Image (cartoon, rainbow, N blue to C red):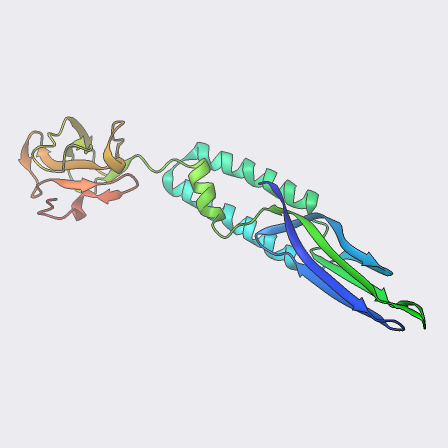
Length: 253
């Protein structure tokens, strides 16, 4: 999050001799921006004046909703990833993020600028009056539309494990290998790790570092390394949760 300057609005008015004129402009800030402060820039003035104010229009409520919804979704994804550390960091970041919001939010999210000018002089020296003024807003980009994606990229690790749930009535052997950039899920990718899928238990495979996108190549046996249970080489990726009895009989990639 960073504070940046933006042109909010500009108002200009010109009045002839014996005349007075007023013009207004306004700017409302909603997601992703939170109005922090503003400054006035006078470009030109001759017998003119201005006034600037900020007031509530209700856009802050939408910002608070977006922050909460984005963090809650990212925290749900952390649970899906089983990333306990990431979930903790997200909750801490949410607390700090809301502190920013509460610090800067005064429920005043609209700027309004009013400029006035009057003609002046006398009958033999008639003069125009004018006022040309801008508002510069200081805003905090606090709730972008892709906030959830940014949070996931910043705080969470993609799931690096494949979970097999043994719903067979007997134990099974899971023989698997990580799929790297040089090997496809086939006989070339020689399985190197064997795990026992106990009845009713989960077997968690964590691909070795270098596995392509967390992919693993697995085969299922009654008794390793013989007794192949109807499948060839099946490829799975990090985050998959597999019921062994539901795997395809002839999975081949």
